[in-house]
Image 1 (cartoon, rainbow, N blue to C red):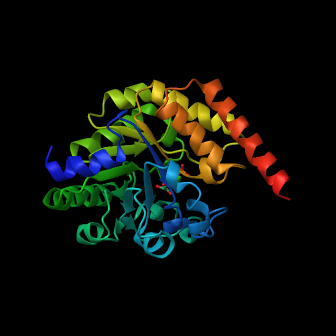
Image 2: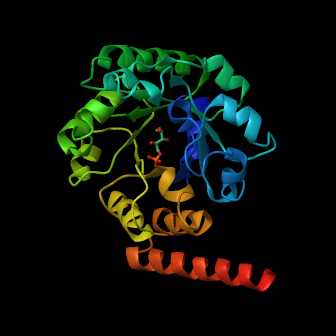
Length: 279
Ligand code: R5P
């Protein structure tokens, strides 16, 4: 691997464990100010020290993140649509273009760029071309590309299907993505086996309880994922810091699921006690 590319990638995927806990806060690029991400600075600040990388758009990076941060940045560079179109024509959410150049990503000292691909949709060809173009540009600058296997409204059911996700991840790797972000599914090991680059898992919608979210993380690691790029199940949690620490315990510390959940409850109790003592 070219030195610059390897150096950037090793800032995100920690060489000590070969794993990563990425914090995703890029949701506003098509969802706007969603619950608990209305003020990204407030959401991110207490979590930054526990994140191996932060995934976001350039606008939120520039306006809400301190430039002195040492946390590596994974810059979302695709978009061009919004949730307001979803009811009218759900497939249009997949109509993404590249919104930020690789030169700009270099200027912002990003450690990787990320884009969504929509395999099996009307915009499959366009989004795969976006990926191939970004990989070509990335090669010139030593910039790794993270391909996000988005599913869009029309493929919501397929988004849980190992065969579909294996297809999307493999195509992303074939086109040159340095790593791939996908969803958890029952036969995730098949997805990982067919994908020659590292796979990280998104959390998806906020689950009813933290144990369920930690189980996704635990099962993903058991099935070969090298970590997570998670958002809502961290910062929409009752205790985001406790949640990300417990995820780290699984990803980097090889903790069992019940150990990680125990850690979450201890951290939760500590935070509640501290709050009570201070009021
Ligand atoms: C999509 O909005 C983004 O790529 C998110 O970064 C991704 O879905 C991960 O966030 P979450 O864990 O909330 O699904």
